[in-house]
Length: 204
Image 1 (tube, rainbow, N blue to C red):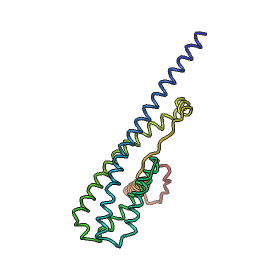
Image 2 (cartoon, rainbow, N blue to C red):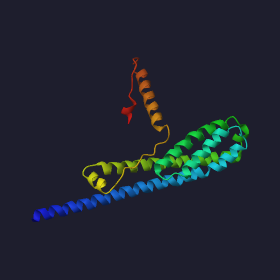
Image 3 (cartoon, rainbow, N blue to C red):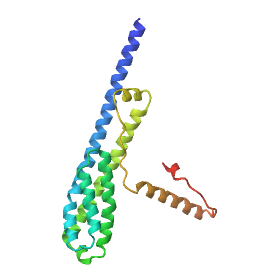
């Protein structure tokens, strides 16, 4: 009887420790995402001024400007991290095209407001990159925590859900291309001329 009681007490204590551990991990993920959200908001707050500046010099680029505004609207109406990540990746794509277009307008490139906005966006993007890495590391620890047995039992019963990773648009493809390029370069350096087929899935 005493053995059963001790066993039950140990089970309860383990459940409490496991629950508190998951709560702590989830709080870290929430905090990491909050840091990203601050930088994303700052980035999107710069968009109206950027659009107005470009519009004054490149009125023919209406489609690109509309897509930039659309991405900002999408972010402002987003409710979940997934939706905000999607809006951010959409903006990253159209901003790249917008800055490429600016190369065709020397007066725009020389505009101090445009240059200042471009620098602010670059600084914000760098901060987002650092925050994204920290968030992904934290989310990975949390996701592993709720998937490991026997902690997964507590996670399932109490409704702990996995968190998405925040990956920049094209990030996976770029990693694949870099690795494949290195494989080919090494093969050429070693004198290997036969073709090699690489399965991208093994890189993850």
